Length: 168
Image 1: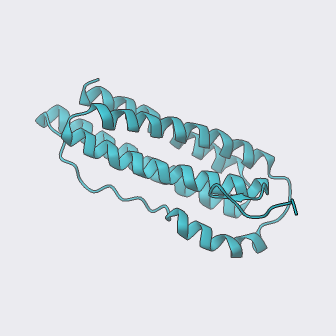
Image 2 (image 1 turned 120 degrees about the vertical axis):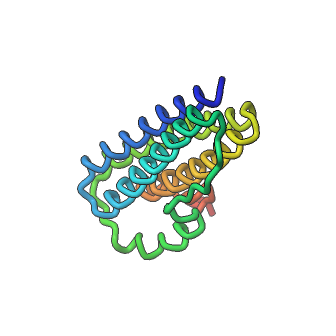
């Protein structure tokens, strides 16, 4: 796969996940859920904008200059610290639609992260560095989505760690 093809495919992945978050935002009445979906959709749009800029750069100059790509999403550790206060504010109403959207988002985020992982292994240096940052950000999105899903599911896990044990 050429760098141009890789960027074009990455834009398709980013559009897909952005659209999924936008759809979830429209269908979620809960303010906390809307903030999560809105932040994730906005972050994915920033990825699209960045990739489109890099595609133009590749086409015009035949190279990719890697510029820092930041993500406003909090680190998984910060999310874990804030969940204690969030727990007291969230209602116990049926949130099955939100859980369904989060499960689908998790699946797409994992798929996207694997795509970037493959590109990191295959691309030349400049493109590899750019896609490594995307892989890092998408892995952070996976952590955010998994944490939100775990929380809504009340399954006793948080960031893959068991919060409580029902056995004695």
